Image (tube, rainbow, N blue to C red):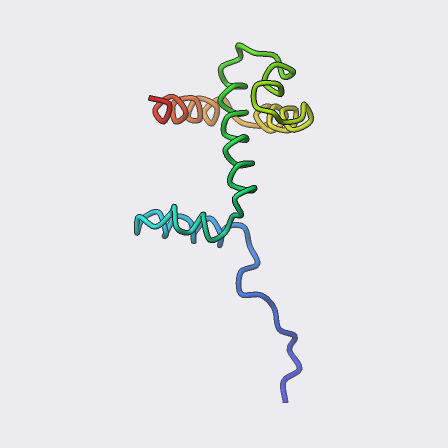
Length: 103
């Protein structure tokens, strides 16, 4: 008799990314995200996108972004710190992606 402990089938971040990629290919990404995220989590994700957008624009202070979006300064700082760790190519890609979606 096997005594191998049971584990979850999805244990790696890349599996989640692949799942989302497949859902997007099938044009079901909206459905998948609604299944995975609560309304509060979706609002938080929207805030994170706006934080990145504002930080990339560079026209407002972190305090002003915090006031504008109704999030804590610490949340803005985490986004800023994450951007600092990204390559120039990634930042350029992100800026273009945000610009396209804004239009």
